[in-house]
Length: 136
Image (cartoon, rainbow, N blue to C red; front, side):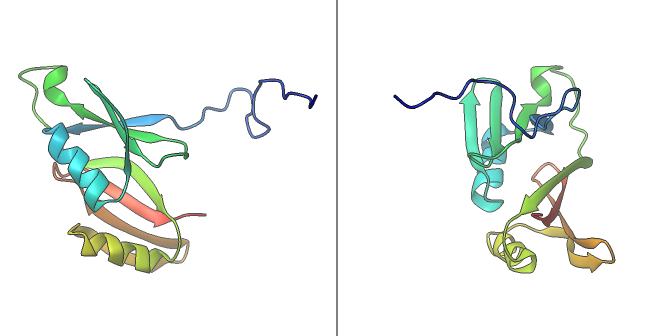
């Protein structure tokens, strides 16, 4: 009978160092946002359970929690802007950006190469800035 592996921390895990789980993105309309993040940006719908709706890449770490501001404050105002969120694109970065643009995404910052590397910026339907970078 083959030996079974004992559950425990992965070899990459180090005590006291968090791993990325999810980031809340405030949205006005979850249905519209799910459509934009999945059909236009190319992410997968990971969880759709009442308030907890997340998008990301199946089998990869991290997700975006699409969070309606009205769930916390019925009189709350949507405050779009720089979310500080960066997503990594696999493969050829410029070609990946072109594919996203072909799906109707408007770039606030076209793909540009700086001395430190490539990046681009897009905005979701609520104006949240999403930065795109090549996968390492």
